[in-house]
Image 1 (tube, helix red, strand yellow):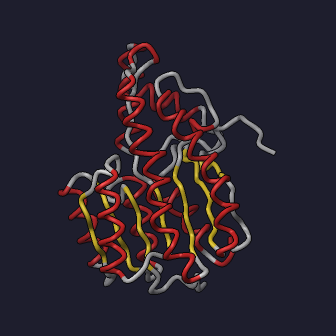
Image 2 (spheres, rainbow, N blue to C red):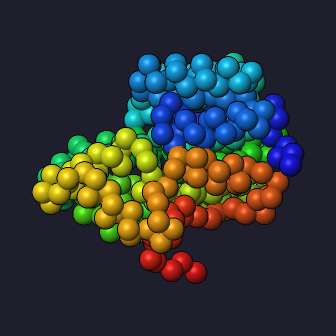
Length: 263
């Protein structure tokens, strides 16, 4: 099926590893020109090479999206070199696996800056390019802690709830310019960040890591952890013609583990 994405330009933040890497690779398979950013040069270059090996143009920028100046430079350089930005996948994230009494103001603020404020700031800068063409897709990646309580992931919960709210609020504004804005909530996904959460749980419970993983997997009705490619597929869907009338929505890709009912 032709998803009508060939030669369009996608910017994926946090695009060097895990979910961001999977999204960038899948969009590249559709013939899109790819822009990725991340804080770590080594993984950034590795992913850029893998995309370039597919015969797709890839621009890779080292950036810390908690810094306003880095965001400004990232979007300006990306748009200048790629010509425009048609798709934005906001995926950058940080995580502190800790309980409430262990968390400082600085840790809360840093997570807000890396995720919620970065998503808002990048969307603000990218939106004019989409508005000019009367076409654009913005996909925000915000974990399931937007919907569920997780004692070791309170900072995640605060910012992911904000991401969900921003998605809905901004979608109404962007709709007049034919730009859709949606959100994907990953469940437990096989990434380095989730591995750290499992390791902290193992330390607290005294169980070995395999036992923790098995327990968490047992809580998932479909019987396995989510893979980064599963999240990438949902992000791609929101960019395709099949989703042209879907905006302001948050979809959970969690194997059925979420128990909340959203109307």
